[in-house]
Image (cartoon, rainbow over all chains, first blue to last red; front, side):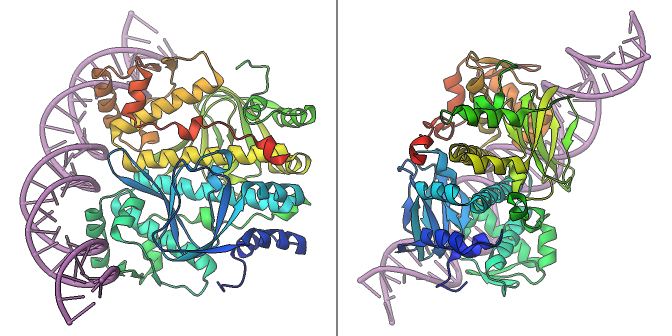
Length: 247
Length: 247
DNA sequence: ACAAATTATTAACATTTGTTAAGCAATGCT
DNA sequence: AGCATTGCTTAACAAATGTTAATAATTTGT
């Protein structure tokens, strides 16, 4: 995605075609872009929550710490994603958010969402549709974490990342950068770092995935999808013609 | 909850006070209540999706089958819950939904949600707030499934059910009906039925939970919450004064 | 360019959870 | 009442994953 085009606009126009006013409203959410360094916190649990963020560039993740010292990564955010949607109904942050790479974020207050609700039913529907897709994604992840083997989890996650990256970066094929350490992957997949290492070793023995540092190579995407029992209906389904509904 | 009061109204009024018109709009979503038998399917994956359901009485759950024959239960629905929010952005059902007990459901088409969007910003905000709370719940469940031991998962789930039931049934204390078999519990918790049995045995040896058929007794709620590392901020946070925002 | 810190690999061993199977208890059906 | 079905418990064993620790490779900071 080009740096000068609005990520959020790109994201929304997936769902329906927008009028000029709607576009302006959306673009106004990406005012005051802020540079932010790899490794720095966007916010912590318990912080007051009154704004969303759009991630204009860079990667980020949200996470929680458990009592036994373990960490669980809840989401990986890519450019164009909205961070903090979950806390709309809460006054506090429910999770920590940290940048993975250097990036640019734009803050906008919850109140602005109400302007969207007020001004455009289409945009309201899209926001809602985004939230509902987001849930579908979470659900899929839940199944993944609850019921699949380390091998399947890993394959599933990698394939999901591939699809998500391709959504905004259509030239991506079976080779891309995945700026995550094995420790981070472990915290995403609910495994120990040691077992992640074992799993990658066995995946590359089978020729399914090669990981050299942060570079991933997937020789056979279809094979990987099968290894992860990937069912892409939750990502691939034709986007609902929401504008038809609202007509 | 009394049978003759609208569940959905009750649910929404948690979030903000509603005008007469708003109440009427909501109540109209619960027209044409339909009786439905324990064990019957509301819908299956792949069915066309164009409506939501409100669960007026009874319990239900949504689930998915995995390739290896395992089943994962995604959500347990209680009276007042809206079923199928997730599929707003999809044209097909992404999961199966089945009644646990006999119950009453009301169907209303996705289109009606757009009427809400059109007619009331407060209601729109509440719908969005409900969706965002729902996500918070899912996230908590994700952590639970990914990172906790069988004992913790079980304690966590039981305590969550207690809190959810108490929300609409304020007289509930450490004793209530949980109409779920151990097989169903296993599919909720991502465990095998045998291990659920072991886990309950050990929980009752410790005096934390007694389960006799579908009757649960929790002598010390606080102790159970601790055993499940339960952090109730995702349920207990003061509800955002949304009407302030929209003023 | 070097030292320090981080990240990944491997092995041995421990623990948790799954699987199979058998028996028992409860429930529903006729 | 008797039989079949379903649900629960227990035990023995198997498999997957976690833990610790030692080592190697890589990156970072100065």
